[in-house]
Length: 250
Figure 1 (tube, helix red, strand yellow):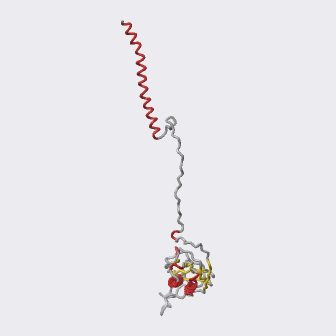
Figure 2 (figure 1 turned 90 degrees about the vertical axis):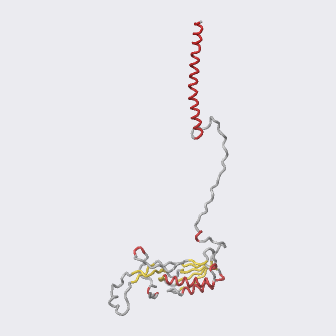
Figure 3 (figure 1 turned 30 degrees about the horizontal axis):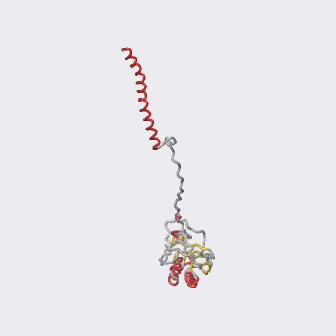
């Protein structure tokens, strides 16, 4: 594949084209990582690569700059002594009206001028004085970080410069990104309740559970006692009549 020069896509013209749902297919971005190095520690020194002109930066140029900076930092600084971050993403889709070139292609290449074209790649639109790449490290590695970012800036289609600033750090280890946002749920607190005095049988509730069963048993016992009392009353009524009858017979 013949790669065309960056000046064909460097200038910003017309509106950004980012609605991918209306496109047949967009080539994937070459950038596979946006943060590298030690992501779980704070560093007091920040070095930014800032562009001086507004332009479009293709994804291939961003990936070339990222690889250059990361390799130099890994070699001269060490993975645990820096945090490298790419601050932009290639959202804008580049289009091209492909035409045949070469001998005898003048008849084939004749077509509509300023045609819509097909998607050929993506690019990031940046403004003047915008931060593109950032490296966090310690003051002892400042010169090596600046050298790495300067080499990465040569891969971009615009002039750039560096800005060094100091950051106030708390001196603690920051949680890794995968742990950020997790909530710690405390165990429920159990309060002690004072024991209530036991209730007597008269105060016991008649509803529910054993109380209900006791109420049913009492009703059954009362039902059995009623016939026995009735028999006793009948016996008492017939006793005197039998006695009088015996005296008369005598």
